Image 1 (spheres, rainbow over the protein chains, first blue to last red):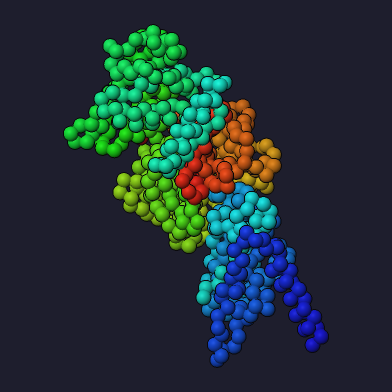
Image 2 (tube, rainbow over the protein chains, first blue to last red):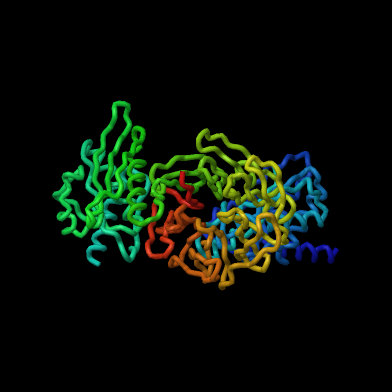
Length: 166
Length: 422
C-alpha cells in the first residue's frame, strides 16, 4: 500500500512537471483542452479518467526544445499514460497535432511538426495504442498558440497536442 | 541627394493618397546608382484617363529604382511634331514618353504611345496599347514595361502577377495581384491555413497547400475557371508543390512513407514516384530553369541547409555552409544563382548565392524575412517581411540596392511568390 501511495505521488509530481512546462504567458489563449472536454459525467457510467482534472491524462501537450522532435524525458510519463489509456479504451481516437515555433520556413516547420506528431504516435503504439486510434498531422507554424517573437511564445508553440475525438 | 530625397517624399505622399482607394501603401528605401532620367508627359485626348495611366507608369518606373522622373511642368506635347527636344535636354531628360488615349464606343481603352530619345532626337518605340474597360492599370503596366525594356535592355515585369496568402485573424485568403500589389483577386478564402502557392509556368494555375481537410493537402486550381482539385492527400502532410519548367510535373513533399520526402507526380496527381531518400526532412523543392536539377531544404546534415540533386534522383550536394540555418531556395531565371532565407543570430535575411563561385551575398538588413522568389526578369526578389508588427510584402533589387515595402490594408501578408510572364 505504501508503495502504491508513493508511486501515485510520483505520478502527480511528474504530471505537475509536464503541465507546468513551459510557463504560461499572457499572450497565450489559455484554453486547456482538458477543461473544454470535461463534460457533465453521467451518473450511470464509471468516471472516465480522461475527464479527471487530477489525472495525468489531463495533460494534453508535449513540449520540445528548438528544432527537436524527440519526446523529452519530462513528457514521457504523460505519453505513456495516454498510451495505456488508449490501449484500455479501444473506442477512443486521438488526433496528434504537431506544432512549431516560427524560426524556420513554413514548409520546413510543417515537416518538423509532422515528425513531432509522428514521434508521439510511435511512442503511443509502443505503449499499447492501436494505429487505427491515432491520426498524426502537422500545423507547422500556421496555428501558433502565442504570437510573440520571443522564447516565451516560441516555447509554447513547440508542441504536440493530443486532441481526443469527443 | 536632396533631389533624391524629395523624390522619395513625393512618392510617399502619393502612396498615402493611394491608401484611401486601394489596398496598399508602398515605401521605397534606397535607390539605384545610375538612374535613367525620363520625362513622362500625361497623355492627351481623354486627360483624366491620361493622368491615371501616367500615375501607374510613374510608380512602376520609380519602384524599379532604375529611373528618375524629370519634371514635365509647363510642357505637354502629345505628338512628335509638338516636341521641342531642347526643352527636354535642358531639363536633363534622356528619354521622353508622350501619347494620347481615348475610350472607344465599346468601352475599350486605347493608348497610342511613343518613347523618344531626347539626345539622338529619334523615336525609340511607338505602339498602340489597348485594354478592356476598366483595365487602366494594365495599360499603364504595359507602357512601363515598354519603357523599361527600351531603356534598360531587360524584359519588364510590371505586367506580371504575384500570389500570396493574407491572414486576418483566423481567416486565410489566397490572393493574386498585379506585381505592384494592386488589383487583388481572392482565389480562395477559408478559416484553415493556406500555404506555399506555386505558379504553373504558363500562369494559368496555382498549386498550393490547404488545411481544409484537417491536415495539409496539395490542391491545384485554375485561375480561369476557379476549378480546383486535390492532387495529394496522403497520411500526414502533403505540401511544397513546385512545377517543372515544362508544366508536366509537380514536385511535392509527402510524409506517406515516413518523414517529409520529395516526390514527383503529374499535376493531376497521377504517376507518383519518390526521388529523395533521407531519414530527415527534405522539403521546398525548386526546379532549375533547364528542368534538370532540384534545389531543396534538408536537415540530413543535422541542421536545415540548401542541397541540390538531379531531378530523376541520385546523390545530393550540400550548397550552404554559413553559420545558421538556410531555407526556401529558388533558382534565378538564368539558372546561375539562387536566393534563400538565412536564419542567423535570431534574424532571417534574404541571401543569394552564385552556383559557380559558391559566394553568398546577403541582400537585406535582416528581420523576419522569408520565402524569396525572383521576378521573371531576375532583377527583383519578392519576399515576406514584417514591419510595424504586421506581415508585409517586400522586394529587393537583385543587387541589394533598392528595397520596397508593400503594406496591405489589413492582416498579415505571407508566402508571396512572383508569377511568370504571360
